[in-house]
Image 1: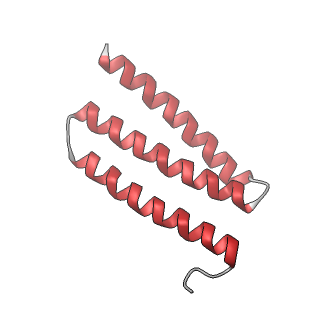
Image 2: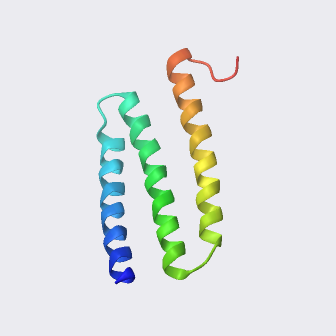
Image 3: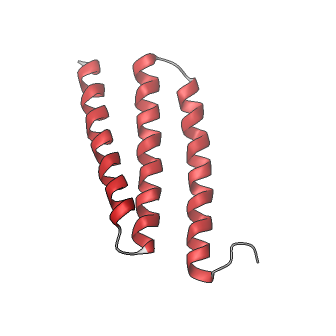
Length: 89
């Protein structure tokens, strides 16, 4: 039963990742593209956690944590650049 739930979650999150990629390519404005990129890294984290649960390996959880930290820093930097035009003051 757990393997069926994990497979269903893989399919749903992969579909969400593809839709986010579509929004990243076709976004009408820059904030839409930043939001799509932010949501893509969150979906990637979810896929890594599911894959770690499926294989029963903890290395995927550490990789998900690293992606979460880098994604947060990247989103903050992009938003700051969008608002002020400069990242480092």
